[in-house]
Length: 298
Image (cartoon, rainbow, N blue to C red):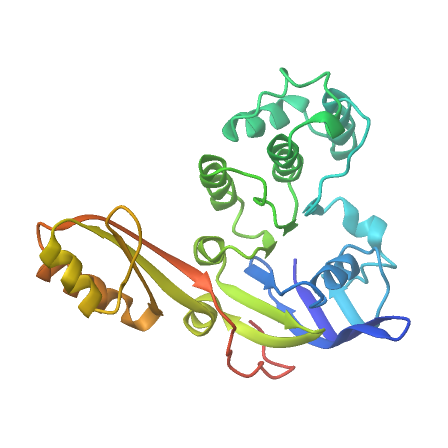
């Protein structure tokens, strides 16, 4: 489903939550919507879900989300950031969703099993009584089991452990290429693995619209942790700008562009002294490129 935003504005009293958002998301795109608290991200999602009106134009396949929400509802799937604490048994929630969507409940069980969630085992438990991780797995199951044209996923893995997140990656990778995915996440690995484009909001303004790799290059730093053995190796790490931690670990934070060269240097020079290496990317204060023009699509 194609999403078109033209000068989208929304205020709550004197507070302007969205200040003229213009963007074009083609059908089948995998897009990350990111922003710090208060950036306007949640407001924009509510506009797209037909929960809020707005000034300007918001269109999904040419339809207005608020006015045409009943026509769009059966083509959307949504995972909220915070699971509702409903006093409803899991079994009844699954049955109701299957009935509304016209699906066999067994389909939900199959998706749940891929997330290592036993729907039959928790069927009589109330949604509000589940752990945070189990609630999140259930919401993902309900969303990814349906044949939607637009999946809106708001911090879907926030309560999941590493293995469950990897399983979630697998489910996303098997969605039809024609389906549009709008993912809200602060995890840089999810942006890298699951999306090709980024829309970044700050204080209600679209400050970046472009390729995921371009965003990561401008907004992320690499954290390199190396564990070494031997006094000579420790001295070499200090000479290379690493800071010493406990148990033989050394750390350096550096621009992504320097990461590979530093790793090659450490592993080749200290061959035999390197015990372990851990590398990850972390978001820094972004210095993104200028937003695209209002007529330029992703």
